[in-house]
Image (cartoon, rainbow, N blue to C red; front, side, top):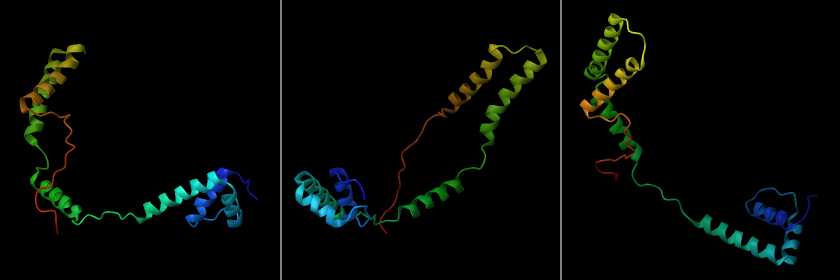
Length: 147
């Protein structure tokens, strides 16, 4: 038999109300609740809260948003080019030229030989006016959302 104290009675009473099996008999729980006013008040408050929560209805969206999102994703995938050759060339040509220059000169690796490629990449992003670290966390849907 389980140890009977106020905490175990409260847990057992709520588990019993939820339909779970408890190590205590229902008679033991009811007897303790008749004797202990603190447990009785707390169990009544928990039952009232449980009843209030059970009476609430979950909102179900009227429109199927996934169909709209999926449609927009497929449309944007068809519009977007698979590979941006111009962007690649804008990066590759200066970096390739710099690497060839280093090989011709046979310069030993230094701070400048490591910084120049980074500066070239920053210059290309600046020229394109693109922030590669920008995070767009807004998802907006255009069009009618009701079905």
